[in-house]
Every structure is written in structure tokens, then in C-alpha cells.
Length: 454
Image 1 (spheres, rainbow, N blue to C red):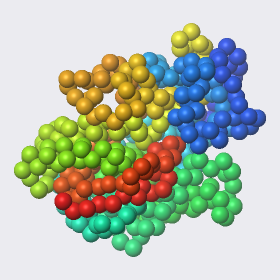
Image 2 (image 1 turned 45 degrees about the vertical axis):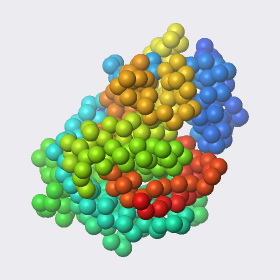
Image 3 (image 1 turned 90 degrees about the vertical axis):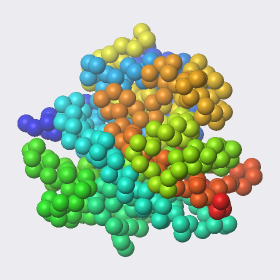
Image 4 (image 1 turned 135 degrees about the vertical axis):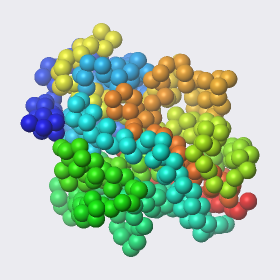
């Protein structure tokens, strides 16, 4: 039995409901069947905050037809994410939501199987690889944003999704996206949105049907490229993964295809979320646009080198503060594979456990005036983020900490370097961004902004 089969068998042995009741844990299961699904989808931050005020940092509840326990705060984040005893399964928690959409992605693997695949995937994010990505990003981003419409309202979400898909296709796939670009982009959108489908039936017109159709398109698109990439010498991750699959053994073409779909999703959608949030915050706080431009001009360059990234200190503050206030992934689910105890509460084997990035990032015990956009809180002088190692967790932590965290910062800084030195960005007076908070933080209205040349 290989690693994958063993992990699947272990997850399959975990029924969806805890074997023991959670009577000792405060909370409620809400409406019959639906539980708190409606407020969860409508305003997750409000829901988790209200439940914390009512029940404390440990509570039971029901969302998306699953009963479970929510653990809040940095200590809870450390307990679940660090997981030294391998008590928490990511696969068993995510599978009911993502199994058919992002099959066997790295986030949907556990323990030895996860470690094996992570070791192969992390080659895409080591320093030499990141430096090579930066060289290609500079030219591509600088060229593409030149044609963005000036002086008229544009939907930033649409523009940045297209740009980042092209960049990701070039960097990870070694492709110049042609006519299929729009189809690939829409397939990713449909696949991601289907993760929230309540009715999971293949009925034309329903969210689930569109998501599964998008998934099938992506499977065909990626699988069709594997023979070419296996024999290619191009310096992209797709080619390297195909070679690693042959050299390491244990990776099938389907493994390669699943990894590439999940990689592009993880690198594309989370950075799209991050840049939408940053542009919104900079538009609402234009003084920070000028602070960052001054820092960037201080480099005296028209393109970034890898060693320049660390010099963009204030840009890094804005990146981190935005991820504090608007982390792309607002909650991390896990499922226990054995009985554990937290703060005096026993969590039986097979309990669904959720921790909340968003809640932690607004705790007044750790952040001064947490509702305020204040990038300087991440400066060396203040270092508010260093009170607890697990208080700032937009990239998770422990065994499943996001492999692409350095890539995300590199791509974000590169885009801002080219964009802010060319444009000023603004939103209408009084505008407040309507936001979808799950599964990823995204603008509901496409984020209408106006850009003007400097």
C-alpha cells in the first residue's frame, strides 16, 4: 500500500460525526440541518466574534452540514497547526468541501504522504527558483499594466486576475496564455466558487455543475500538456515536476495534474485576494501610496532584483498589515484522528475543529486598535506581531504552513513596484468594499477603482 492509499484509507475510516457527543463544550448547533451556514456565508467575522462573546474561545457549532468545535486565539492556532502528535487531519477536514474540486492537492494530504509530496513541491519555492520568477515577472507585469485604462472606473479584480493568471501560467507552466486564457480563468473561478455549493448535484445552471465542468476542463488542459513537459527543457515548475515524478517514483500523471491545478489555484487566487485588499487599503489611505513610492524610487531602479525585496521594508509592512486585516483564508479546518484535550475540554477522535485566522488578527490582547489600518505596527520599533508566534497566521503554520508565502510576497512587491510608480489609485468618496469572506476573501463587486498616471 502506497502513501496515498494509506492516507485515503485512514480518512475513509473517519465518519463525519464525532464518535462521542460534545455535551461538555459550550455552544449550539443553530437551525436544524443548516446550523449557522447562512450567517457563516454572509458575514463570517461577525458570526465568529458574536459566538466568542457568547461562549468563549472554545465552542461547538454547525456549518455546511457539519458539526464541530471552534478553537480561537494564538494558543489554539499553535495547538492545532503545530500538531506535534499528528492528531489533526487536514485531508479529512477539507475533503467534504474540496475533494472533487481540488483532488489530492497538497492541502488535502496528511502526515507521511503530505511530507513526501511537500518535499517535491517545495522545489518551486526555493531561492534560485524565486529569483528566476522575479526576472520574468518584472518584464511581464511592467508591460501588461501599461495598457490599463486611465481616468475611468475599472474593476480591479478582473484586471489583476487576468494578469496573475498569465504570470502563473508563464512561471509554473512555461506557457504564454493565448485564446484559452479566458476559459482557464473562468474554470478556476467556477471551481473555486463551487466549494460553497450547498446543493451538490450536477444540474445545469447550479453552482456545483459549473464547478465540476470547470474542474474537468482544467484536468484536460493540464493532462494534455504532460507529454510535452516531460520532454521539455524549459525552466518552469511543470517540467521540473514531471521530471521529479520520473526520478522519485510514486508520482503518477494524475498526481502531477492534481498538483499543478492546486498550485495554480493556491498561487493565483490567494495573491489575487491579497492584491485586491492592498489596493483597496492604499486607495482608502493614499498617504501610504506616497510613502511606498518614495521607498521604491530610493532603489534607483526600473526593475527589482531579488536582493531588493528585503529593502522594501515599508512595502512589507503594508503587505503584512493588509494580511492581518484581510487574510485570504479566514479559517483553517482540521479533523482529529485521535482524542485530544485543549483548555480542559476533551475533543473526541473524529471531531471537526476550526481555528480562525480572522478572529485572531483582531484580538485586542495582541493588536492595538485592531480595526485601524496601521502598517507601522509591524516595524521593528513596535513589533506587535511578535507577542505570540501564532498570532499572525495568514499562511497557517506547522506542517501545512503555506509553501508559497515567499512567492506571495515577491509577487505582491513586484506588482506594487511597477504599479504604484506608474499610477495613483483611488475609490469613490465614502466607498466601502463589500467582501466575500469564505472560502477566500474577495471583493463582491469587483473592486471599482480609478487610476491616474503620475
